[in-house]
Structure formats: structure tokens, C-alpha cells
Length: 250
Ligand code: DC
Image (cartoon, rainbow, N blue to C red; front, side, top):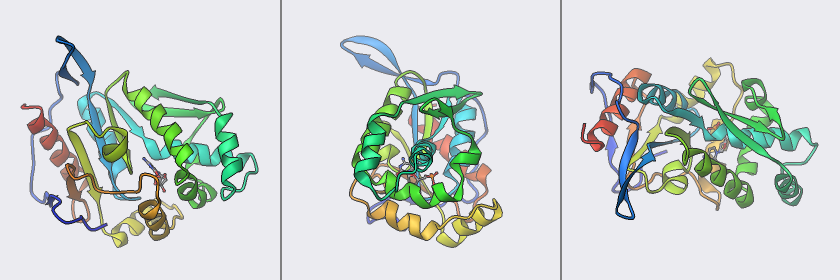
């Protein structure tokens, strides 16, 4: 996706910063005159296969916070819709199922986990090609977004997170100062998915994700845009960590 007018667009070729762990993963805030700690929230958005998962995972590990793939939550619910034999285009049946579905978000080794209706999700279910095909229309349903956004906020109220998705900086955590938009050309993204052996229609999902009415994929005005097309994952991670450190006055 091309950055909108007036956006900061940075190519980080050659930029390096020494890798080190943060001593603290919280930001200090004033709350009613008292000092309190709010968990650190890193928002990482971008289109499908832009490399944002890899980056968010490594950034979370470097900071000692939890990596959360919000797309996995939309995929998990999509899997459940298909499992129940519901047509993803039948919005009212999807809404009914949503109302009677429990989500349980947890953590394992610094990575967020999700169970739907008591079923723990694995990569196998989440990356299935029928899920790939149905997830964008399901994620466009406003009630689905409201519900999952509230789960995401609840989760992050209790721990620091590096959360990746489409609307993390724009809608889920608009107040965090740590917002990133990881981009890459459509050709590079298609090639990355093929190399993973995953059948995915990137261009079609881009179109649906960017044009839907409810929380479309947009670049937050205050996000730092990183084009990862010609960069290694390490270079992108270093750039993101350097920007976080700068904001935290480290
Ligand atoms: O990141 P991903 O490709 O696994 O996401 C799967 C789908 O979920 C994607 O097509 C759009 C949707 N999604 C979303 O609408 N909002 C998010 N925060 C994350 C993903």
C-alpha cells in the first residue's frame, strides 16, 4: 500500500542500533495524582505478508513482552464459523454464533494463544486455505470487530504486548506512542507467502481489508512507516527498536 499524503515514509537501509533488552517494559503515567505503571503497548500494522508478524515477534522478545497476532483471532473465529457449517456470507448467522462463542486468550513462552469455544487453535487450523479465503469478509463484520477489539484491549490491560494487525494503532490502541506500519510491495508479499507454501490471494485480501467500512486497513497519521521490501527482518527489527528507544528517551 502506498503511504498517504503527509505520512512519514522511511526506508531504513543501513540503519543499525545495538540490540539490548529494556530494563522496564512499562511506561510511567500519572493517574489521579499518583504514579502508576501502564503496560507497554507496541502497535504494528500492515498488509498481509508484509513481515509484520516476524517483526512483532522479535520486538516482543527483545522487550520481554508478549507477541500477539490479532489476525489469528479473526482466523480462529473464521475457523469456528466454517466448523459450524455456517456460510461466511450469512452475516446474521455469523453474528448469532459470535454471541454464543467464548474466546480465551492466553500466553505460552511469550506468545499469545487463543482458544475458541474451548478449542485451542494451532497453526494448522489458522493457516488453512478455506480460512484464508473466508477471513476477510468475516473480519469486515462490525460486531466481530467490536468483540475482538474488546478482547484485545482486555488482554493488553494486564501485560505489555507487541500486537500486530490492521487497526492496532488506528483503532485498538490509538493512545500508544509506539505505532509502526510495516509495508512491502505486493510482488514481494506474494513471493513470501509462496515460499512458505501457503496458498493465499494477497491482492484480493488487500482489497477487502482496505475497502471495508469497519476499521479498514489505514496508515495511522502518527505511525512510522517501514518499507520492508528490500530489508532483512533484522534491519526492520533494529529500526523499530531504535524508534521505541528514542520515544522512551533511552
Ligand atoms: O494478519 P493476517 O493475514 O493473519 O489476518 C487475517 C485477516 O484478518 C486479514 O485478512 C484481515 C483480518 N484482520 C483484521 O481485520 N484486523 C486485524 N487487526 C488483524 C487481521
